Length: 142
Image (tube, rainbow, N blue to C red; front, side, top):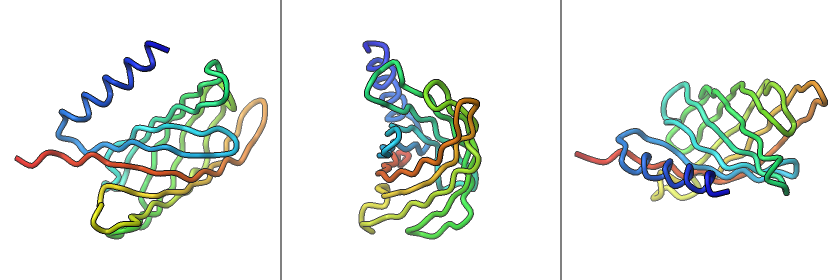
């Protein structure tokens, strides 16, 4: 538990001092909810690393996704992607389809998003849908 708190604090401090645009997200799902850390979604191709949290910490599951923006507008993005999941519900994610939009135009780094993914695993195949929030840290102006 101490290691996880340390890694989260280290990630926040690195992101706060970096010049890159990074995002933090929370996705709620009936299957497994997750916290995520993503790269710049304004680019055509971007990635996200997540940790899925079940009731028990032994079921914490890392998830890595590569996404591509198919539709990009000022207040809306539609993306598709592929990835992998480990530990609980382990398998290949193919495809991941989702969208994100800005509900408040004055807050251009706050998004609501929803996505659906199909996880093909050795033990079972599942479809996981989730909704959540995403917040991006903008680079510092020089």
